[in-house]
Length: 206
Ligand SMILES: N[C@@H](CCC(=O)N[C@@H](CS)C(=O)NCC(=O)O)C(=O)O
Image (cartoon, rainbow, N blue to C red; front, side, top):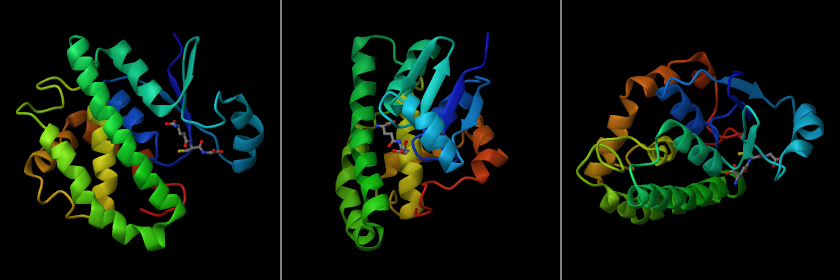
């Protein structure tokens, strides 16, 4: 069977949580870079269901929307919890992650110079929600990792890059971030030249 393909820009962006999930779960996938820009605009963009990527191809399954891709892989790789209650908790935290990612991305792409300071000032209020959601287990659902862990970890990584001390007053979240970072599969992904050579965001701001 052909390898899973992930089609995206050569940035971490909305691709990195998907890549980390794939590597951490030993899926040998193929990365397809949509650049140069003319290639994206003329060849890829018109084929994308919403004109944007990341795009995942797994046999006859073709998907866009990063959170849909994460959920598809979660169902395929048993990363969606044990039952409806667990799956819904994973969904809830993933949706909260998406809300904060949208605010982060808006600041990065539309208002970095003036917006960075206020964004960092407002961050503790937002991180408090996630701190309160952390339970006693290692991950969002307890002892077993789920798809939302990869997404939350990636967002926390962006936020720590933006403001290195941002997790200092959130002991559970900080320990969780460290635990995710230290997973062998996460380290495997982060030690690749592909990861090291990429910026977090397409405009170089971080
Ligand atoms: N809601 C979408 C957003 C996708 C998105 O914003 N994609 C950007 C890159 S991160 C893109 O394709 N930009 C190029 C364009 O719009 O032409 C998702 O989660 O995948």
